[in-house]
Image (tube, rainbow, N blue to C red):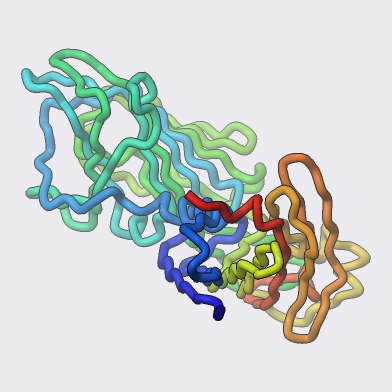
Length: 380
C-alpha cells in the first residue's frame, strides 16, 4: 500500500546538538497496517530536543524566607559558542515546615537565550532530573524569570541538602567588533552578575569563569577578584542579600566555531525492502562576527592559523552502528570532502562544506544513510 507520512514539528530554543538550532522538523515515513512500530533513532532525537521543556506550568510561588543558601560554587564556561553555567550549593531549612521546592531565577535576557536546564539533588533517590516549572513570584523585582524546582527528598527543619543546577545559553555572546577581516581574531562580550542571582540570602559564594585562552581585553571587578591564566575568580563573598546585582562584563577573544543551524529537516522512510533511510537537510550559518573585506583562499590554505582565525570548515556527525550507503550532497550535487570511520559504538562522519565558513556566511547541505530494518523498527 501507499506510505503514510507523519510530520512532527518540534519548536525549541536550542539543544546540545553539535550545531545549535531554533526549530527542528522531523518527517517519518512508515508503512501502515504493519503493527505498532517504534523508531528508536527518532525517539532518541526527540528526547534530546525536549530536555529543555519544563514538566508543567505553575501559577504562582511565594519565596520561602526560611531558605538559606550555603557554599554556593558557580562555574561559567565560556570556551565555546555556548555559555554553560553550573552551580552547586547547600539549601538549609531554617523554618519549622519541610522544604519541598526551591526557586531558580534568571534575568529576562537569559531566559530568552535558554537552551538547556537541569537541576539535581545528588543524595536523593531521584538524583538528577528534578521536575521543574516556570512560575511567577509575588512582589518579585521586574526583569526576572523564575523556575520552581520540586525536590525528590524534602528538607526537614535545620537540615541541609546539596543541590546542583546546570543551564546553557545559546546566541548569548555578542561579537565586538561586530565585523572582522579574514586575518583578525574574534572577540566577544559576555554580560552577567558578579553574584549568584537568587531570591534567597547566601551565606558564602564564589564564581569561577573559564575562558578559551589568556587573551582578555577587559573585565569588571568586584573585590576580591583574581585572574589566573584563562580563569577569572570572583569571591569569596559572604552574607549576600537576595536579588543582589553587580553587573559583570568580560571582553575576550573567542575563535570557537560559532555554528548555528537555522533549520534542520530530518526525513525517515521505512522501506518495503528491509531498510530504514534517514536524510537530514541542514541550513547552517556562522553566527559570529561578520566577515568584512575580501576573502583570499590562497592565504587561507597557505596560512590557516593566521588567515582563518575565526573560520570553521570541519563538521562532524555520528550515525548509529550499522549505518551504510552514506552520502553527502547540496544543490549542485555530490560533495567529496568527507570521511567515514566505523567503530563498535557507531559511525563517525567527518565532512566539510564546499567553502570555508566565515562570519555571517551561510550554507545548505544534506546527507543520508540507511540502517537495517530490524535494528530500528520493531513490534510492541
